[in-house]
Length: 145
Image (cartoon, rainbow, N blue to C red; front, side):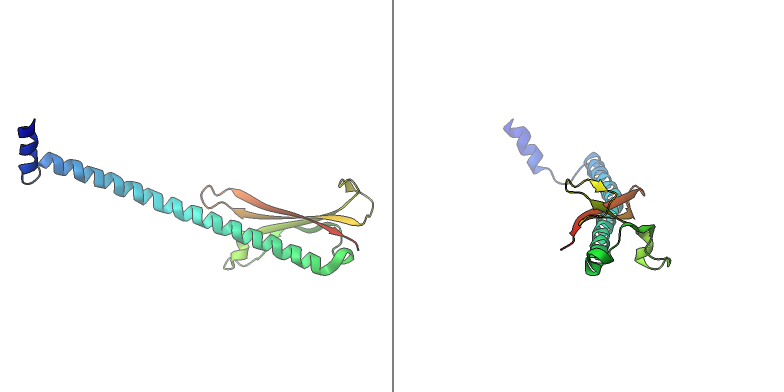
């Protein structure tokens, strides 16, 4: 056994088979990396779109809060539509819908005017990997003081 290990350690160079195996492993690793990079870029873009969607929802909520309880209105305040008509603008790829409903004392939707409103803002954006539509929804309550 010792002589066999000694022969292996004393060899100089590599055989053609060893070189081919090493090269094959390197090729497989390279192919795996080239497949992973576009997928990572898609995941990054989807995360970026989700962040922008949350910003756009928060922006609309702040706008409604600045109007106050009576100024915010009720019903479909903003129907689902693109935020920009210009394809050069990043907002072109986002759509937003805003609904405001009155709530009763049990937080159920009420047809009558009450002193409590529920604001639902939905921002629609694209998943960069699957090209499917994703949504970011934010709900908030607004009370009359």
